[in-house]
Amino acid sequence: MQTTDYMNILILGSGGREHTFAWKIAQSPLCDSLYVAPGNSGTTEIAQNIDIKVTDFEAIKTVVLANKINMVVVGPEDPLVEGIHDFFLNDTLLKHVSVIGPQKAAAELEGSKEFAKEFLYRHNIPTAAYQSFNASNVEEGYTFLETLKPPYVLKADGLAAGKGVLILNDLNEAKAELKSMLVDAKFGMASAKVVIEEFLDGIELSCFVLTDGKHYKILPTAKDYKRIGEGDTGLNTGGMGAVSPVPFATESFLDKIEERVVKPTIEGLQKDNLPYKGFVFIGLIKVGDDPKVIEYNVRMGDPETEVVLPRLKTDLVEIFKAISEERLDEINLELDERAATTVMLVSGGYPEAYEKGKEISGLENISDSLVFHAGATIKNEKVVTSGGRVMAITSFGNTYEEAIKKSYQNINKLHFDKMYYRQDIGFDL
Ligand code: AMP
Ligand code: GLY
Image (cartoon, rainbow, N blue to C red):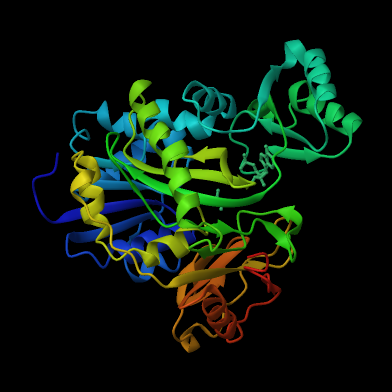
């Protein structure tokens, strides 16, 4: 446990989420030196980037020891599912370092859809009915599909970079896809097991919870826009924009989420001995007036972080310290009551093939919005694109409409070759 007040902090990841973490942590008087691995063009302005992979635990160890890091904040799921927190706890030189993110056993909530469904059922948390199948019982999978009404929801059990969920209208197509996942390894080992789920009809939102394993605090809700095309059409992406708070999440609906979902989730972690110090991202769907859980993620969302953290007034490092010392109950979360929205600028062609290395111009003209870099890097002293999702433009407003207008006004000042963004973020609210 940390006794010093000032901390050297390492953030793992390279997206808009991690730039937002860096932006927030850099404001803390408790933060001494800040590092991001591998980081991007945004984080390099406020922290020191270190070019190592988030799953290279030995390289991370070297960096932590060389820079006297006291706290590691894990952005993406892969290192968590691969057990980075356990790696630190099991190493005598690292075990004093606080890691924000659950241990491997708990990270299975995101690492395995079947594990998550069993957890939800065991703790009576509302979710879609399901059964899971593997290559040895494909035929039973077909029979189960025949008992369901379309659309059919098929989920690869393991991590599949956000692509492992298929929603199909036709029974024969669903059977063919089930076979392709189980027998032909459509998603590699990730689809060695498949969860088939009842389709839930409703509007989605996400709830973010901080926990030290014993206590919890609920962060603002957010809604993201996953499809590439306007009107929620076309291919799934990592997320094209987000809004917080979610206007349809009324106080009584939020109470239901807390009572029926958040409390039994945190109690379930304790009952099942799943060690958890970090963010729980609960994907929900509002069916009628009731929340049902679609998925757990064991990290923050991206681009949800870009609207949730800017609304948090409390010092994030103070919160993280309280989490690692299991005294989260002592923290009082202070929130900005205004709405925040973000719009993601992406490379033309994304989420399929796209070009990189395009110079981004106009950044100096942005006023009254926050710019969080994602797939962007510095080359010859210029900011250029290096990924599909390039940057997120976040704004505040008294209403989400006012906030979104500001984001779009600022986006008009930005340019890169084949820049694309959705012009309808918030259209369904
Ligand atoms: P997941 O990776 O589990 O979040 O699923 C990806 C997306 O598929 C979700 O964001 C939902 O839009 C959709 N989805 C997943 N499960 C269901 C379900 N049971 N009913 C309806 N839509 C679903
Ligand atoms: N925006 C969805 C996610 O981070 O999983």
